[in-house]
Length: 222
Image 1 (cartoon, helix red, strand yellow):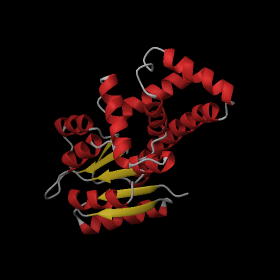
Image 2 (spheres, rainbow, N blue to C red):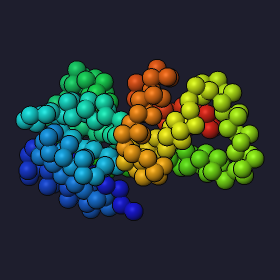
Image 3 (tube, helix red, strand yellow):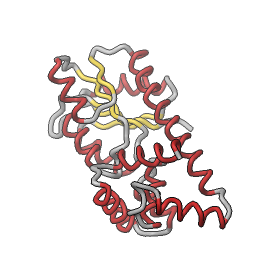
């Protein structure tokens, strides 16, 4: 399945050039002419990665990245800045906003594609590791599940979560959206949001990334 990218760029000719470059590299490409339109695209379909300019009218790249990171539904989406701004201050601000890569215009198409592929490969490795961990859990027999449940309740750092919160945490680690988790568990999106909020509050964490990291580390060390 092709990876879906969202390219955010207010310069139409450059936007089309980037779209063609990434389409030729085998990606499915969505486009937006600014931050507000980008949020509309994300509301319709969660992309696998966002490529964004910084200098745009209205919501600029820094604000776009910060809002993506602040939303539990989108905070795991990788972000690449592609911009003409090339100062140390801008780069630091970009990484503080949560971007995964910072590339400068004029850009080399091969460099852009390589950066995107590197990030997506890393994400895929994480997904596979989480999938292996959850498969082991899901394939256990009834008695083993009961033992695992008791063991999990006794384990430091996990004992304060309810069974429902544990299930939600596992699916968060699989980078599923709140809507996808709700469909998987047959509960409402609002209930999923409540469970995630409870997990973050109990653990004193700030976002879904920390939930995913905890589940992965627990699976690989346990």
